[in-house]
Length: 538
Image (cartoon, rainbow, N blue to C red; front, top):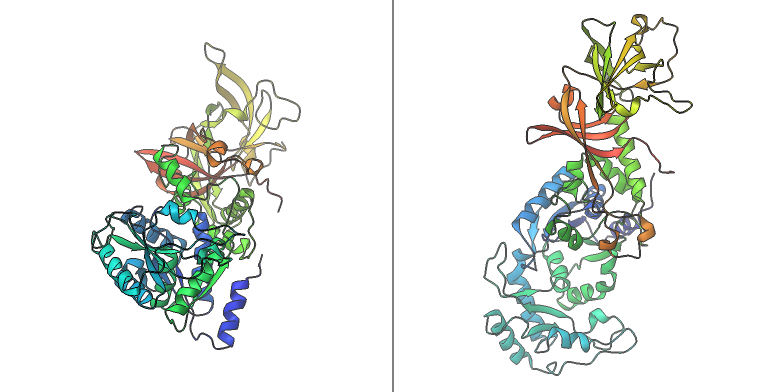
């Protein structure tokens, strides 16, 4: 499915009319948390636009708020981008330009375009005005450039306490756009920076640093999500006032919102810190680290972003659509394997010895071929696949009933063994030797087909199933904490064929779902990726 892309229309027009010769974009995460699925959409736009037009994309770290930023997050972001299959041209940090950003602030002061203000953050907010009423000018707005320069340098040198003073752009307190009402462009903040240490005690605000960093790294098109649309006049004011030529062009697009997912770094951080999840890479998390650990392939994530398209209007995508895209990809590419949940012993009383049966790796993938699976007289099937008192049209195993064991033989249930509590512990069966799969001459048509694992070689496994972290979109008016499903991880005992213990990866477990197989603490874990059944109405 191809969606129209208005950003590409703009870029093509800029190239055709000669406004730019070579495209350069940037992917600009703040290193204050792990990237999530929404950032995958931004990667698709930033890296994809540059790639389409033969340009370059920088990895730009917006590290202007040292109190929340860590090297851990920088490393995680790099890993996520590589996993998604993207390559950046230059790795750039806002902190690379702190000296230049500061020099530009002094230039604005000299031009009479910035002033040092003594109002507190609360007082500035109170004098900002409303959408229908202009703001009130600061009593410090009339300070001379010389006085402002002296005070600003004293701010830099640590003479004042945090919040005691700030530097504000001098624009228009009556502007209909509140972002142009003398915005703060520097604040005092004593916090150790992950790269510059304690060199600075003042830091630029994002709206001021953003256009400068774009210009200094040669960005032609600064692609942002829609919440920055109202900030574009300030972006342009900074570039025009400082004489940037050519000035980068900011273009906004709708961010990716998906039902049932927490798409907010702040809330994701809260889930981690409160222990609601096991960490940033918990498979229930919409972080790219969590998506990777869940077993979702990056190709499926990129496909989803492409199908979601690039639009100007805000919208919300159903989680079922994302899961359908993942399922479609795995159905075509994931190898097939067998594991049983809540295993029940099955003994074939008239079978002797053991053999290997051919098992299709993936019947939809050309050239995938087959592999050998051990078969013997003692197997495990799922307890839910046997019933002593079955309902009508029950096609699984029942007393006196026939079923086919996947890729093997037709069997008939003859006898059940119970424990002292009356619980069925074993089903004894007979098999039809002439019913081998692919060479069946038995004449019996078994409607049910069961998956199984051979008992002597089976591996104990922990099977994990997941609910969504949030209740569905019907609860959209509620806070995340009210929609949170805290009991969203369910663990079951399972028996798996040894192939899964020896080959980590993403699989379709027959009649169970799509799962990632890996070892954790010496045990085999089967972690749910998506269910087998697709309920999404495409």
